[in-house]
Amino acid sequence: MWIMIIGSNLAVFHLNVTAPLFVHTLFFIVPFILSGIYNIPRLNITLLCLTLVESTYLYLSYKETYFSTIQIYDLYAVFILFAYIVSISFVKALITRATWNGITKERDTMENRYTSKQNFLRLFIEHTNDAIAIFDLDDSIMEVNPAFEKMYGWSREECIGNKLPLYPEYRREDVRRRSRMVRKGESFQMLEVKDVKRDGTVMDVQLTLNPIFNEKGDVIATSLIARDISFKVEKERLTLEAEKLKVAGEMAAGVAHEIRNPMTVISSFVQMMNAERHNPYREYTAVVETELKRIDEILSEYLVLAKPSATIKSDLNLHKLISDVMILFGPEMNNRKITATVDSVAACAEVVAEEKMMKQLFINLLKNSIEAVENAGIIQVKIENQNDHFIDITITDNGVGMSEEVLNKVFEPFYTTKEAGTGLGMMISQKIINDHGGKIHIESEMDVGTSIKVTLPVVPTNSPVYA
Figure (cartoon, helix red, strand yellow):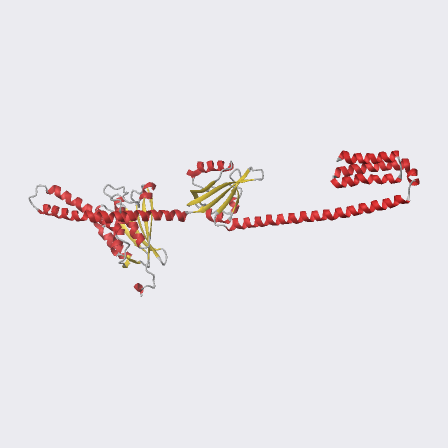
């Protein structure tokens, strides 16, 4: 382009030098028309400067020749060329304007689309129930959404630019390993882990970790999407417990009834043998009778699991019920010098329950507390209303306590730390509480003691009991 346009200019200059005619000067417009097609600014400026120098030289050298050679037809040619240039310029301006309008419209359309996508993405991130956080390559938080603030308890101002303890300490190495892998371009989907809120509460979450790429395909940030699945884990736990109860109940129904029939016969014969004054094996048959009673107790616990939910219920006063149970253990606690207190501050302690089951529940719980404390131990029972609908019965002792491992397995069937335990007491207690629409919560610390809270629904104050 440079050679062609500058060359055409020099050719016109050479023509004017060899044949200095006015009409020949009109050919200087040809290189400008060519340069206008390509529209190269540097070329246009160079051509303009060169033409000015050439025009000046020709004017100073051949001005008299030019004026003497002007013809009327040359003026027509100048007029036609001028009209041609104006027309071409006008058409070019229209084309340029149309092109520019098209580019502007396309740009506005793209900006609107981009803005719409941005707004849609912003609205989605702000209103989704999943917690979303963006991290830089140093694992510092760049952005969080409102769901993240609500789920983890940290405000946006506290998050931006900081590294927060969002996971338990034991997960530190695992988190770092995954972060390195995500920064290398890998993704992790639907990871079920435990995270920590600002107040230290541990929650079950489902994580999705993804890298964020730029136009060149380089990782510039990482994203975290977290969903609280504590309810799902709790549901699975309750389902598993229900299955355990179902299996234990089916076993109870099949085993207990089959064993009790021959047991009745054996027990009758053993009692007859013990009644015989001259029985030489009385010492052994007494042991057999004791063990038979123990087997009968185990079978009775089995049968509790086999029975359906309590259906014969009556209005019970928990003050009186627990006091009666405490009287049953009075002699044993006196012998072991155990101090037991009952603190009742509940305004409403009436529940609708099956009396036998309720007695068995608190017998099981108090028996565990008595067996856990040493001589001269302390057991405290507190009865208080949680609200107008529920009542809490808390049994606290200063016994040996339980480790976290034992605490996690306390409701499993046949799991016991006692030499003569059946491993069914706490499972049966849980079943009784569930059948009555209540809950049980246990806190324990080794060598400190255990606290068991039982929550049961109370009789509404507008029920016939208070009429």
